[in-house]
Length: 194
View 1 (cartoon, rainbow, N blue to C red):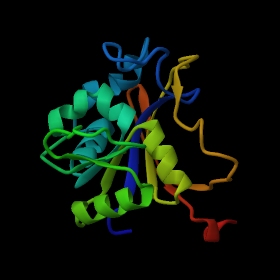
View 2: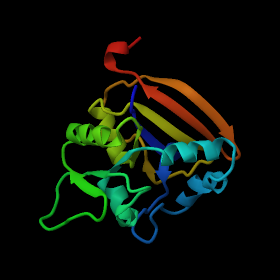
View 3: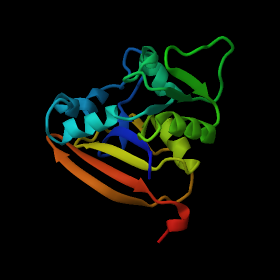
């Protein structure tokens, strides 16, 4: 796969990517910051540093609208000036995203634009809604799940709204580090079903 569309997501063992009551001012929800303690090692030579550097080597970003807004629209630059494609249901007249961001309302068009913009580099995906939409459309190629050894007990789940379709995954990499296991899965296409 030349330039996979790859979800990067920190998740609790019980499937939450944000704690309860995620909102402006409490973007990760109550206790949701716990999912990102592994970033303390992002400058290391260990697995978390490797995964972090890989994420920042991506050539484009696809984000869900909610994630984009909660992140303060990243002030228009997620990393290194790469294009940000914000998957949204609608765009209000006059709502122009800052910097390198643009709104896209069609999932397949969003994936196409992001792949083209990324060139030969992977595309990073942020947000549960965007991940689910891309999965349902058959456009998500890989998932890099930063599995954190905690049970949050509530909040926003990563895979709540996928519908009834069965999705098979292949584990292609596992990296263990302090307080996190980085798991990379390849999404099997329906024609590959076992």
